[in-house]
Image 1 (cartoon, protein in one colour):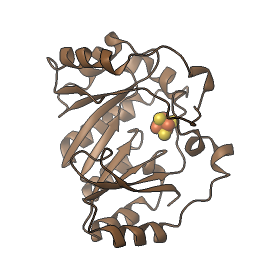
Image 2 (cartoon, rainbow, N blue to C red; image 1 turned 60 degrees about the horizontal axis):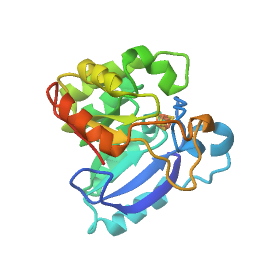
Image 3 (cartoon, protein in one colour; image 1 turned 120 degrees about the horizontal axis):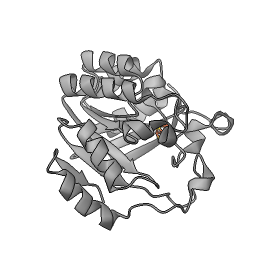
Image 4 (cartoon, helix red, strand yellow; image 1 turned 90 degrees about the vertical axis):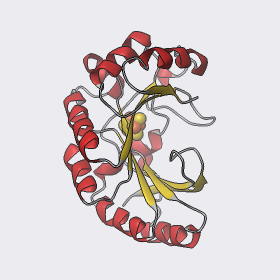
Length: 234
Ligand code: SF4
């Protein structure tokens, strides 16, 4: 497992649970608005010193009295060959697991769910299908893979959300198109775009582009709630 960073306690990354968070290194997408370029762009991630998973597991073992779970995010965690083994050890500590994924590895996701290694999936849907390459930064249209992952998650995940980071250039009509494309999902969450202080972007030219504000997302989510359970995370 290539783990770049461990946050020992978070109350916002796993709905309803106090969780630690790990960020894995490497991603197959290049979302231009992504604020973790050091996890995504090889020339930056080569400068990282990954944490040994043994050390991460030891910290989790020591802190399990304070924690309910672990959120595994990235980068794209499902690209890590050792993820099933790592999660089995986390589950062995009695912690629930939330997986954040871009949904492009449906077979890996299905395996994790078959093995009951994930309790909550947050599945990113980056854009309406017709605009996927624009928002993933790669020419391949991966939206059919994400749709396949959604079907797997609906069938197998103990709990899940579909979510969209409302990046610059995504408007209410795009969010409605996504909501229609994921109709039937248990819940759909709109996340405002922001760039934490001191963070870079995969494509710096996206910095400063206009985007919907948290206040603007709330009424959009209220409208989309006619299609499926939807809320804005503000
Ligand atoms: S936002 Fe996109 S590029 Fe960044 S980690 Fe997620 S899927 Fe990868």
